[in-house]
Length: 396
Ligand SMILES: [Ca+2]
Image (cartoon, rainbow, N blue to C red):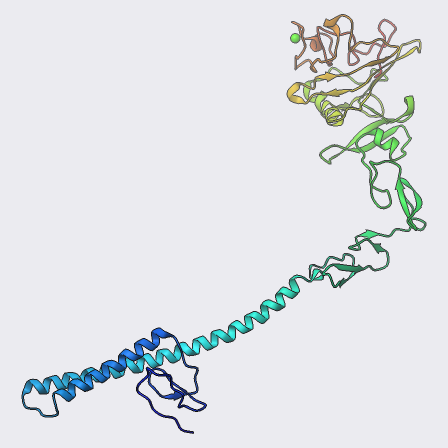
């Protein structure tokens, strides 16, 4: 294999058969030849300088007639050496650049393969693992997916449990066949869970209507913040489901108590007690359907009651002010009493140590009681408990 060594690089060279002529030093190389015009120009100039230096040297001849001529020839020789050095360096850089360009092309090829793979995987919907409960994901032609669900599960993503309530009973609902599967149908929209086993226990009404608790006793209910508290439930009076917040059956418990005790509650839930203003506030907060009922009995056994719709109380910054709506009953409407100064609706709660009433005196201290006093009252269920017929007691 032969090739010509060319020094003139202005022409396209086709004399290197199977090899390529290196554009910068004219040698034949297997390497790819850089066709960059800038490199070509630099290489050409270096070649020009070399030729020019040869011409100058020729003009001075070979004689060393004068010391100046000798110096000039020495300088020319030095410049030629330096030009050759620069050319060599340039060729090395060019080779290096070719290598980098070649590596770069290989990397780009690899990158395009990787990109294609990733792109393909990105459109695969099964990579997101959309099937729950060990369902198997199949990729469809249109890049959607189909889940093959394990036994007991259904739905597009296998997230719906197929419950056969014929074997697993519904707690607060009934088992009905729907779409070929037996499923629990809950007794109330408030009840949730596949087996209708989740329902609120906000008060005795929830316990009665949702949970079918029918005994008159103390149960656990859930406050709005999730904490548990005890509540006394009356499940027999007028349809049941009543949360009792005050109860007096004898004189064994004093109701002449201070603000903190009325806030937190006191007494024995099986006998005489006050549930507590904080519980009452939580219980009526954000509710529009609470009915307040007051039952009372005198020494002759005569009974009377009063009921109010839309019962609620304010928060502590409002001193638990009383709000009631329409009246129903046979005891008389004390809360919206005809003498305005004695009516209780809208009043703040007062205790002997916390006078929030509208009287110049302190009603709670004066009557050893605590209530939503005005100036002062038409009802005083927390007042002194008389043991004889001189004064009737109130149970409420
Ligand atoms: Ca006062």
